[in-house]
Image (cartoon, helix red, strand yellow):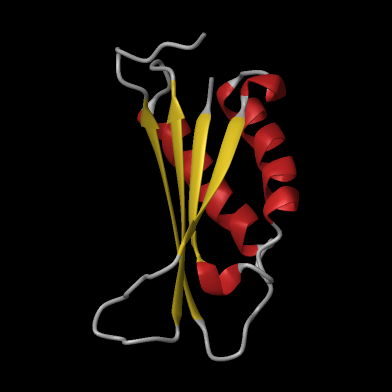
Length: 116
C-alpha cells in the first residue's frame, strides 16, 4: 500500500544509492506505520533539470513522497517524514560543488485509490 516516489536530480546518478535507500526505507515504513514490507512500492524518477532559488547550477534536489492509506495520525506521519530524511542523508555521497536540498512528505492516499 505505501506508494513511494523519489524525484532526484540527474547530477546524483552516481552518488545516490537508490537500491540501498529503498532496501532500508521499506522496513522503516513498515515498522513506523504498521504495514508489511511487501506492500511498499518505490519508484525513482530522475529529473534532468532542477533550479533552486536563483542559482543557475550547483544545486541538487531529492524529494521523497510517501502516500499511505488513511488512518495514521499527523504525529505518526511527521515521525515517518523525519526518519526518512535522516535515512536519505545516509544514502547520498557528498559531491564537490553540489549543494543538496532534501525534502520528504507523507500524506494520505485519496479515497479513489485502488489497486489490482
